[in-house]
Structure formats: structure tokens, C-alpha cells
Image (tube, rainbow, N blue to C red; front, side, top):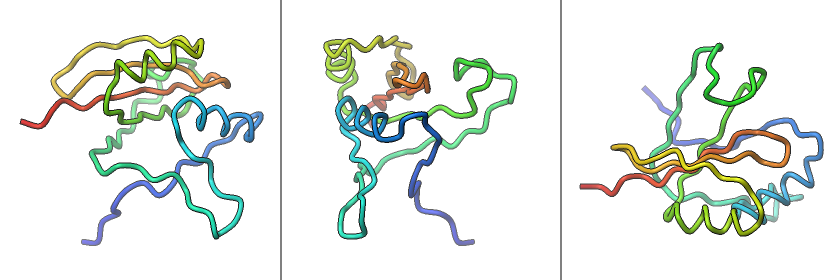
Length: 122
């Protein structure tokens, strides 16, 4: 069976797409989609990606109408959290688990963003 090899894009609606793209660049280092085919998109590091549909009644994403939550892998959760907090962004540490450490924040439009520092490979 042929399988997909990864996520090629994540597309969502925003009230102010340009402002939100700039926030993701400034706060998380995610390059916006290029304006032409000569530019390059954000390159992500190889690693695990969780693909997990949730029950439609979950409150895990925050607001009841929220249909998605994105999770970004990070190398150093403490450094990322400190960087975001210095920029005035509220971040909640979710704790340490067997698969790694997690924190959560919201982007300027209230979309949930989870940060994940994977547990070291044994």
C-alpha cells in the first residue's frame, strides 16, 4: 500500500492572515508560504507526527467551536517557553509524560498551539 510521507501543509482560516503569518514567523520561526514559486516554504525537521482525531465533544482544544489544534515539536521546551514569555505571551506548561514535555499557548486569534519536546530516544 502506498502511504503519505508527511504533512505537506496546514491550511486554516484567519481574520487577518498576513498579521497571523507574521506572528508565527516572529514567535515560532515558521516561514510564511512564499508569494511565488521561486521562494521556499518552512522546512520542518524529520520526526514523529501525531495524527489523532478526537471526539467532537472534547474540551481539549479549548473553545467548543474549535475544530483543530496544532502541535509543534521543539528541541528545547524551556528555551521556547522563556522566549515566548519574554514576548508577553502566556504559556501553560502541561507537564512531563513518557513521550515528552508539553506546553500550550494561543495564537493572536485564539487558536490553540501545543509545543512538544519529545522524550530522548533510549
